[in-house]
Image (cartoon, rainbow over all chains, first blue to last red; front, side):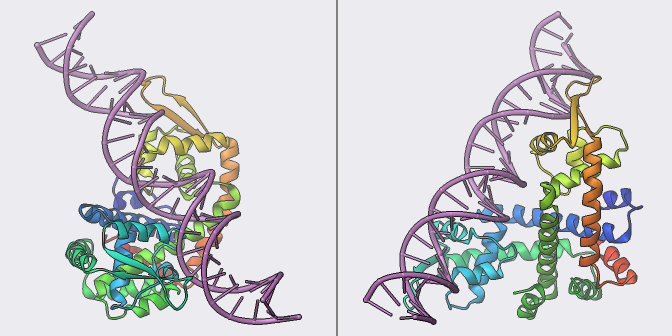
Length: 148
Length: 148
DNA sequence: TTACAACAATTGTATATACAAATGTATATC
DNA sequence: GATATACATTTGTATATACAATTGTTGTAA
């Protein structure tokens, strides 16, 4: 049963409930597509997210709490997530010299190269997911999402 | 960092990317609120979802593949999810007499009673999440989500 | 009627996630 | 300078989820 059909099934629901369910379903679609597309790279959506954050740092290292703060789903397993990126050679990690409680995490050249390939795939997914939307509709959607 | 601030941080991103990230962030907010609100009832969002589907059956039993099909996140652990509802006495389960491969799952009176209490809490959350939206905006949002 | 494919659910396993407790480091107070 | 508090990360544990393999049942074709 696809999203549209399921929503139609529930047409009697109050608009509020329908909206929330609709959002959850759409999100699920997006997550599945992203996970599927990243599978060949052997990274999870969260790991991809971390790589993007690190790239955004432009060489400035990020510590764990920064990553945690900026990730989509907050959690306390950032350590283990970074472990996995480390195993793949996509990031490096060292304790911060000025404050040895902190760690400094950087994306490696290998990480950047892999990320560029992922970017292409992600671009395709975005276009695919959003192909039904005009530019004006995208702006509307952003405006509405902004109200949450 | 709240949603708004994070989106603002990324203002340079193309609208497409921003929209996807925005959706993921909003969804995360919703999921967290729901999980938090259901915690006193000791059910996960998925379990709540299943209870609602069963109620919607109006006495007609649902089998596992029906549940699986209608759940927000598709998965193969529906068996174990139903196990948990069974332990709580919220559903009962019997093998289908006409086709012994199938199981028939029903919501119990206890399940219905618990669900009614959860409904109230969920109504509050929905109102809280959507308080910034006019009725017209809700319709717009639904229309746009429908395009996915 | 037997053999085989399709179906429905369950189980096994690896990974992911949430939450709490523990570790190690820095800062403040006496 | 010893003690307590706060900070940043790591570790432990229970639960959740994804995916594949297995079990048991039914339908079908030789």
